[in-house]
Amino acid sequence: MTYQPARHVGPFVIGKIDTAVTVAPTDQDISLDVFYTSVGTVSSPSVSGIAYSDGHATADVGLPPYSHQSPQSGGGFGSDIPRSLGSRACAGSLGCAVYSNVIPRFRHKAYDTDEILLDCHVVVLGGS
Amino acid sequence: MTFFNKIVPSGVSVSQSTLTAPSSIAVNQLMPCTSITHTGLTVNGSGQLVLSSGYAFILTGSFYIEEAAGTSSMEASWYDSTNTTAIGTRLSVHLSTSTQSGARGSCFRALVIPSVATTVEARITAITGTLSDVNTNTLADYAGTAWYSVQSFTV
Image (cartoon, rainbow over all chains, first blue to last red; front, side, top):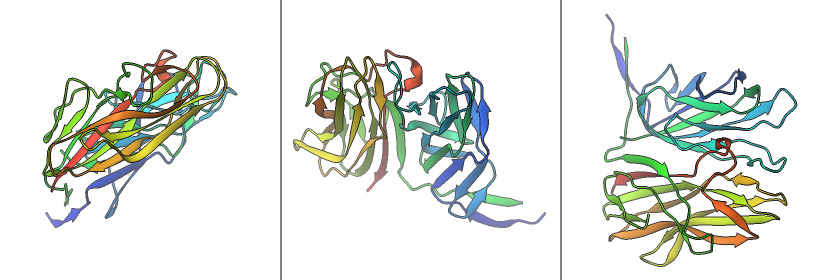
């Protein structure tokens, strides 16, 4: 067995969706495709700290997309909805949650038939 | 085999919870923070954060508004009640003319390094038009939830 030197990944992780995803209108965790740290990309890191999420939804059925998102199901949810008709909330707010030894992911619920997620990401700042 | 050693700054604490509706929708009203358990910080009965010395605090908040009718907006920031001054960045959210619409923005933030126990709150600093709800979502849960977070470090 060969041991490599410990890699210091630094006090932050950024997880990002790189491949567009079509989601059904149910609450679900979306896996992140790539994780960036101060020593480069890592695979499925288990992290603790404060996490902020930001989403980007596009419509594929001709209706304004609207959804909410958070780093995990128990967190504060941001929304991603364009300014459109009455009785619709508007776009662009962050989600927030505290992670405790979990792999970062993107908690999402779409309220339209299908939506495509691209560039959605989670930033985790290390903490306990 | 490769070992990863994630560096976590010493003495870091993080928390996240909700911002609730003010007692009235008016300038200088506070949006109460729900209670959290966080080293060096307590939440008093009014929903204000009481910050202890010996720590640096990064406070972040995100509110939600709904309008009754017409163009409206709201601005908020963290407010140091002990020293009676607004602190950090402000968040301003605008709604165009539309009945019963809701809106979110990004967030408002502040860095606080108190030398003595200091009370801060999430405060409404400006309102235009007529708002029907603040931090209470009557439309649908796709508008998300109003929240705040605290990240602190020992200094």
